[in-house]
Length: 222
Length: 180
Image (cartoon, rainbow over all chains, first blue to last red; front, side, top):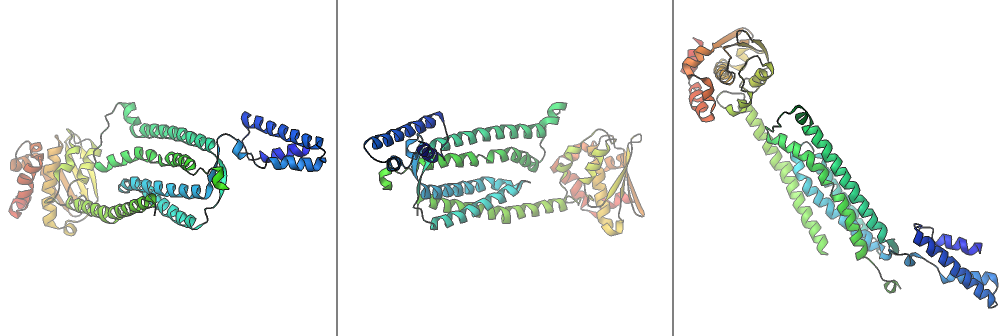
C-alpha cells in the first residue's frame, strides 16, 4: 500500500494540486490498489502484483485537463521567432525616440532584435525532436495575469507622468504652454514610453497561441 | 523559408534603414541646422526677430525677462551682466569683452539692433547703456524713435522688421549716425 502511494505521489510530483487533480490522484491510487489485490487473489505474489499495478499507469499528464502533448522543440523555436519578430516591431516603434532624450530605448530595441536574432539562428540548428505535456490552462492564466499587471503598470505610469508634467499647472491654475516642438516631443515621448511595453503582454499572448498550434496527437508521437 | 521568416527579414531591413537614416542623416542635419540658426542669432543682419516675441513685457523691472531677452539677441555669444534702474526705467548691459575683439563695425550694428528690439519689446524701457572693457555706448528711446518711428513695437512684424531695421543696418552711413 505504502509502495503504491509513493509511486502515485511521484507521478503527480510536477502537477499543480487543484481539487480536481487531488481527486484524480486518489482515484488512480484506489484503482491501482484494486488491481494489485485482484492479481493477488488470482494467485500472484505481492511484489509481482505491485509491479504489474505500477506498470498499468506510467504517466498522468494526459489524464489532467488542460495539459496537451506538445512538440516542445518546435514550440520553443517558434516562441523565439515570435520574440524576435516582436523585438523588431518594438525597435521600429521606438525609432521616433531617437529625436528625444529617451533614445536609449531605441538602442535597446536594436540590441533585443540582434540578440534574439542570434538566439533564433542558434536554436534552428538544434534538434527539434522532443515532446512533452504542457499546460494550456497555465499558459492562458499566465497571459491573463500579464495583461492585468501590464494594464495596472500603464495606468499608474501614465497617471504619475501626467501628475509630474501637469501637476503644478493644475495646482496653481496656470495654463499649460508648449512653445517648442522639441519640448512637445519630449512630453509626448514620456507618455509613449509606457505604451511601448505593450509588446510584453502581446508576446506572452502569442506563446499561448503557439502552444495550441504545436499540439501533437498521441498517435503522432508513437 | 517560412512567411514569418521573410517578414522578419523585411522588417529588420526596414528598421535598419530607418535607424541609419535617422541616426546618420536626419539627426546630424538637424544639429547642423540648429547650429546655423544659433550662429545667425548672434548677428543683427541674420537674426530672427520672432525668437524674442515671448519676452514682450510692459516693464523693464522684470530682471529674468530682460536677461533672457538679451540672451536671444545679437552679441548673445558674449558674456554679459545687467543692471536695471527701475525708477529711471533704464538698463545697463555690461559685456565682458572688448570692442576690438568682437569688431567695431559689428558691435555698432548689433547695439543699434538690440536697442530697437529691446525698446520694441519692453514698453517702458527709456534708455540702454552698453559697457565694454574701455568703451561705452548709450541709446535713448527718443533718438531711436526719431530714426525708426513710433511706436517701436509696430516694427516687430518679421517683414517690416527686415525692411525697416535689418536692411538699413547694412549701410555703414546709416549705422554711423548713431555714433556721432
